[in-house]
Length: 408
View 1: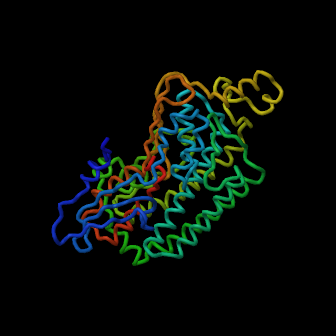
View 2: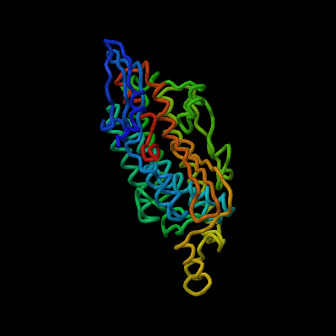
View 3: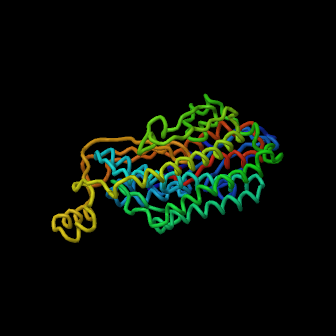
């Protein structure tokens, strides 16, 4: 029987009819500035990009299909491996979608702890972004300083849950742990130290002539272009559109805290850089408001729903019914009602959405992810033509894409 190459039609579409003086090169997937397993097929006229095709799939793990073969609690740690720079945002997005599906109300203290972890994740993600983006452009000092502060934030994660990168610190129905002693003191010290660190980054970059030459008027995304390509997060707000899901469709307690949504009408890479800097200040403002709110709450950490959520450990160890229910939930999984839900949250990179279709089984019938990096990679085919090859590195780094959430 003749073997059929099913990928052949796809790759035939990638063949260019090019001018004789033009050159076609592969940028990635091993290029260090491709920020992961991105292959860009570029047609160059000298050093000017005339055509670009993003080719993804080199990190594909079938994550959505894995979810359909796992019980709900079993899949939650797998979400860490999507945007692994801000893993709590993935944990939380999936947990919130399941909670909406089964109609759970999370205790207030758990909501506050979740928000603390989410804003810390936003800070670690933005610090990683400015460090690697600056390094791509040639600013080595900022890389070292930003990683220093990122380590301090990761120390807080480690103190809370024992992990630094992939946390799994959120549960469906709440959080597994209360804050350790002196954790809030350490958080407050971090909050007080960070503004000076952000000023240091801006002092090194804002008026740096090389930085400005590499970012200003580079990677211009008009508002119409941003909307037509499905941009979100800083990529959308950098084009002058004030859209933040935490403000527009508040979840947890975001409607109880005061913060601004940074917007830039510059539409270029420099404007998106300034948005990231200001967003870090807003995250610090949110964290500062959460500390007194935490102290006023009762100690409940998990929702009370025996049909879906295991009882507290004390009850499992002392009450026979709670032990049996816990055994069923761990071995067989919860059974949400028949229905479907789509829940979007504002991850550090943009709109992260989970669609779940339930047929009443212990595992999803269908699970689909709406990851912001996928759309921000798609726009490269319109954004890169007309730019120089050296600016391709700047634009990819500025887009802040992570391939764990693209090759799902």
